[in-house]
Length: 133
Ligand code: ZN
Image (cartoon, rainbow, N blue to C red; front, side, top):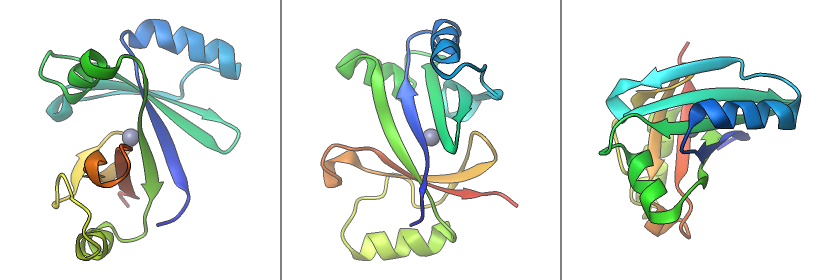
C-alpha cells in the first residue's frame, strides 16, 4: 500500500458542497463524475498534493444514502494507492481482512477499486485503488 490517494466525504448536496469546498481550497473541483453502478455522483478537488472526493447519492439504495441516514455527512472512506490491486487483495485476505468486492470494479477518476469491510478496520471504510493505465 502506498500513499493516501484521496479521502472520500459523503455529502447531501454535491452542488452546495462543491461551493463550500471551492471556498475552502480557493479553487473549483477539477472533475465531476457519476458512477451509475454505485449510485453516486462525485466531484474531485486537488489541494496541494491532497485529493478530496465528495460523494452524493443518486438513489435511496446507494451506499452513500445509507451512510448519510446512519451517520450523517462526513468522512466516508480513506483510499490508498496500490501498485497491484489483485496482489493486495490476496495479501489482505490472507491477513484476515474482509474484502467487500474481491474482484476490482471500476470507480471514479479512472481507478480500479476494492473496499475492505469497516468492521475489520476499526470502523474505517478503506478503499484500495489502482490507476487504470
Ligand atoms: Zn474514493
